Amino acid sequence: MAHHHVRRRRVVAVAAVVAAGLGTAAARTTPFTPGAEATVVAGFLVVLAVLPLRWVAGGHVVAPRGPPEPDGAVPGAGPPRGWRWVVVVAPLLVALAWELVCFVHGDRSAWPTLSSILDGIDAAPIGRAVAGVTWLGLGWALVTR
Amino acid sequence: MSARDAVLAVWVAIGILVASGAMVSVRSGGRIPGYGALARVTTAGPVRRTVVVLAWMWLGWHAFAR
Image (cartoon, rainbow over all chains, first blue to last red):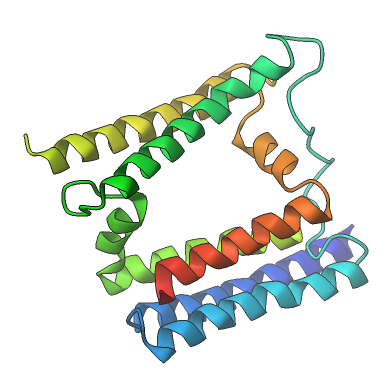
């Protein structure tokens, strides 16, 4: 168990350094330039390189903190099985529908999509760095959990 | 209020709706699944996970390189 903790700390420390480096690189790039494309491809490579490590480690790159989490809600309690998902799925469907409505209207200044809102955040280097690290963290979570 | 302000107000309302979903799930004590459970179901199995990873790659390209 102690070995797992040490290994976990090392993996997280390396991941934090890599994320900080790529976040800094993202902050210094401009869209539609080779530098921006190279930074995103570096993010792909870092995250996808974790997959072979996962296979070697037998399923987990980072040792789980505790017992496995349940896949969903407590069985046999609350609303019927399908309806339980409405609480989290419905807001996402509403967001998707509104994104499509904004996208179809075309005029981004009057009908901003999530992307165009993100562009405002991305305009500042610090916003770009935070968005880049968040994106990397998402990818990391996808391949390590 | 301009059209842009109205559209942004709807986005804020949707953000509140999404956060409310998370809060309802947390307060249900496990009776209602949350976004974590949804993510686990969405990424369960190699095919679904691959699709989600491809979506993640597209998101990065779209947001930073385009």
